[in-house]
Image (cartoon, rainbow, N blue to C red; front, top):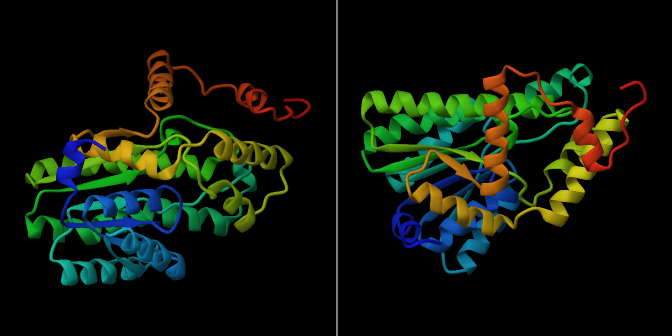
Length: 293
């Protein structure tokens, strides 16, 4: 952790959504160690409370709040409660998100709507409820929205998630421009994580199982690789908080992998090339290529 991050995030209030597990928990614990009061927000009240208790046990300050970011009224009540209790928010990390597997035409309608409600609408609702209050408070602050390397490129059998992360990236760029127009002292950052250890792939198959064998094999391979080679959430959060503290817009968990993804997208657009052949991805993962593909 750089001195810049230690200074910038040594006080004030941080709000992290989806903070009960994975990278959200990593962010919450790291800013708690730096000295911010952390509002650990998650739909799972018990797990959020456990993370907040852990931050307190490590010498930090934290409170838990149960909120469904896909519920606009709930998010508005959440923002009002945070500002009533703390007066300002210096760091808002919109992290809550879920995954889903399957070919796009096989995705259940309800699952599509729920994923977009959390991954896309949830970021919008938090922006809508927190930004006016942050502007009114007038304190220098930062909003970091979680997109993904999947927000830069297309990936087979993950259409809902990939669409949502492209949307979050576009929303973040628009937020950056809109805040520039009004001259608010709010930095905006787009977080582009690569592989950070979590249960997201296993959770997706548990909550929205698919009968597609290729999708199941891809998610099993991604979960395997995530466990074997994924970054530790605390270490990844420390690296990304360094970049946020430095005022960067593009925030990477793994500089090499994330830059490679950005360059692939850039080359595709410059060459007006079609999306990559997914069979190459399947082969790299050790997933059998379907017959006739």
